[in-house]
Amino acid sequence: MPELPEVETIKRQLNRKVKGKKIKSVEVRLNKFVKYPLNKFKKLVEGAKISQVERRAKLLIIKLSNQYCLIIHLKMSGQLFYQGQPNKHTHLIYHFSDGSRLIHNDLRKFGFVKVVSEKELSNFLKKEKYGPEPLSEEFTLNLFKKMLAKRGKSKIKPLLMDQGWLAGIGNLYSDEILFLAKVLPTRTAGSLESAEIKRIYQGIKKILTLAIKKQGSSADLYLDTAGQEGDYLPLVKVYGRQGQPCYICGTEIERMKIGGRSAHFCPKCQK
Image (cartoon, rainbow, N blue to C red; front, side, top):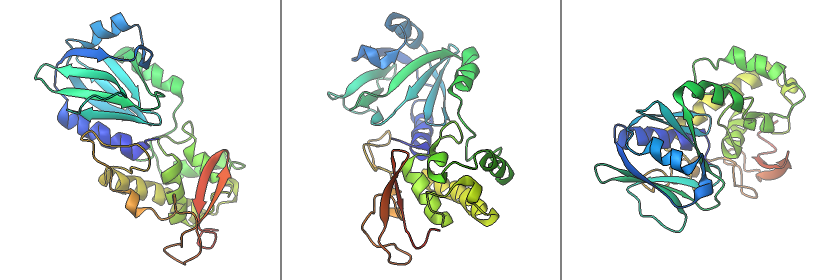
């Protein structure tokens, strides 16, 4: 599933490529993909201009000139291609008045598009109950310590992935953050020492920032709006490397299940 760096990459690219464009028509090839009455969806979208593209957690928010917003969740396999070629996995096509287009593909069909008014947007996001944005100024080390103190019995790996606790981090980046912090994924929040908490906090900021700079990781089906893979995956230290030697100490990277999700770690470097 695309995580914060991948969705942020798409957001930034869409702002460069489609912001200000007028939607001439929208082609819906899979009705259930749109979580809104189709006739109303078409009336709202067609003729509107894209005024801004934003992100909250793993959601894309496309603001329209008519004070409505398209809420897009890419889920496991969603892709947004600017000027791409439609295929059997194409479920939506936005045709712009200048002849360009934006194609929404989804192999597994778990993604969706919703419509809310700008007035409803704040309440909609509140109902989703997302945690703080990890790259925001509001997410300070002091706040992180307070958040951990409230979840002392929770294991740190699934806690980092809990979207209601902290927004945007998934399997890949939680593994990499904990490796950088030298903390085992099975540790509970309450067992973490002050220095370890600081290293995790710094790792969150450092790894997510670098992953955005590298335009994400193509660990599964993720491609950016030009159909290109992200450049971060070759930099991973533990994710997907079970059975291979640790780059730091040479110990074999291990993999285990925690809360139904995979965790990759070095049993020597991480304590």
